[in-house]
Amino acid sequence: WEELVKQGSIVERKWLGRDIAGSRESVSGITRQMLLDYMQQQYSAGNAGVSVAGNVEHQEVVDLLQASLGGWATHQAAPMIPAADSATPERLRVKNRKSEQAHVCIAVPGLAAHHPDRYALGLLSAALGEGMTSRLFLDIRERRGLAYDVHSYLSYFQDTGTVNVYAGVDPKNAAETVAAVVGQLTNLAAGLPAEELNRTRELLKGRMLLRMEDTRAVMG
Image 1 (cartoon, helix red, strand yellow):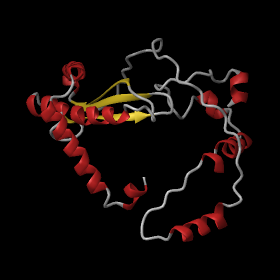
Image 2 (spheres, helix red, strand yellow):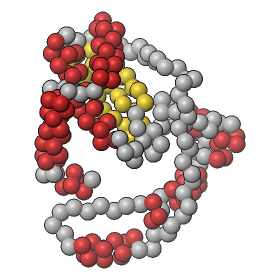
Image 3 (tube, one colour):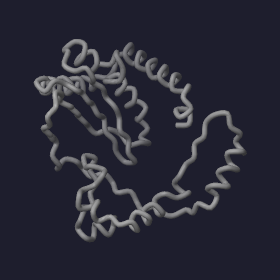
């Protein structure tokens, strides 16, 4: 990475709107040794975690890990590149393709992965667009009939995050859908009524209990 920056192949900035695969220039400039060096530096015992779930004995897991990963060295990982202010890049991007459906995605700034308010934001997102009783589902799908699939989701990163809304709509309904989504996002500023808040809590509690039947979910 540092070599490519020095060569001018890539600019040392981090915007969430960038393709994580990189550009044609940055990918073509990567060598095998660069990948090996990066993996050795960034993936080490010092920043890795092992999670195990199921009918297992703790010491048995420890012994297995010691035998297979006991010699894993620790390296100082390269520092994180802070997210840049996204006020200057384009705020709207439209791609035209031969498709019968328009895919609308709207994102606003969210919270970092360890922000103390991340649980409250999770409740807010669930009320906004997660489930058949959410505001987006009831307004945009049920009342307006604009979209079959409309939902919200959160993305968390080390120092920032996003609140996202997706809708798959008929192209002629795209503008009306965007306006409706923005309206619902604006309405969130008033907060959630007690009844809606409690309903959303119960939704998340039920979802968590159902997921506990899956070993991978327990492990996570």
